[in-house]
Amino acid sequence: MSIIAQRIRQLHEEIPSGVSLVAVSKFHPADAIREAYNAGQRLFGESRVKEFVEKVEALPGDIKWHFIGHLQTNKVRKIIGKTALIESVDTEHLLKCIDTESEKAGVVTMVLMQVHVAREETKFGFTADELYQFFREHRYEQLKATHICGIMGMASNTDDEQRVRSDFEKIAEIYRTIRDDESLGLHGFDTLSMGMSGDWPIAVETGSNLIRIGTYIFGNRQY
Ligand SMILES: *Cc1c(COP(=O)(O)O)cnc(C)c1O
Image 1: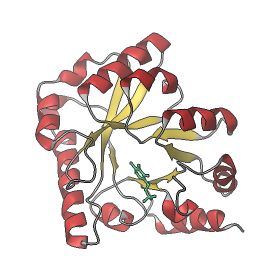
Image 2 (image 1 turned 90 degrees about the vertical axis):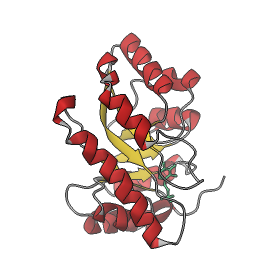
Image 3 (image 1 turned 90 degrees about the horizontal axis):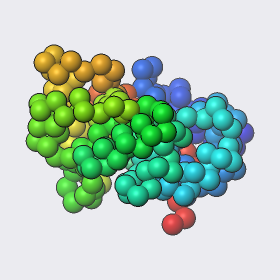
Image 4 (image 1 turned 120 degrees about the vertical axis):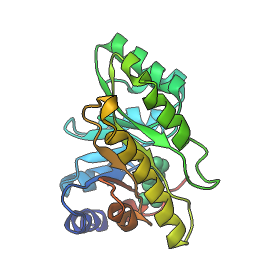
């Protein structure tokens, strides 16, 4: 069995039920994805539009593709209709653009709102206050062809486990505060995407139900 297949099987054994695994295949060739696919993996994550589109076209149609990278508004159209979930909505402008393009294409696009709590590493995402305000003002009700399914976030890129845990706890609290606010009347707001190769066990402990793992499955990326 290939190392990729072994890692996929091992992760599916270790991950608690109720937590889904996105195999982050960015910068890895289609053949690597096929190895994971042959081991049963059907959910993959990509972060660059061109690579995303090429892989969607080249690989089996029963793969579910998540877009997880920073998305420029002028490229939104290229991926609409091809994503199971866009995890990385980091501005309202992008959200509106996704909505407009989805409506034009006659599809409903599922998205997560990316929240920013980590130190300097990820500059993308809403702050907690921006997100609370967005929901408190019911701005999501203007969306016609976009469904907000939850929150995505990253912890600081550090060996300091306490720091990572506290970042994840902050993200999880934002998620639960929005999810549990009955005055919002949200439906299908049930996804908390946190955790990567180095920190996913802590993410799951703190409430993640969607983890995004690249390096551990596919090895180091060649940028
Ligand atoms: C690349 C990437 C991952 C995967 O990170 P690894 O450390 O390789 O597991 C997860 N989430 C996002 C948003 C990414 O860009």
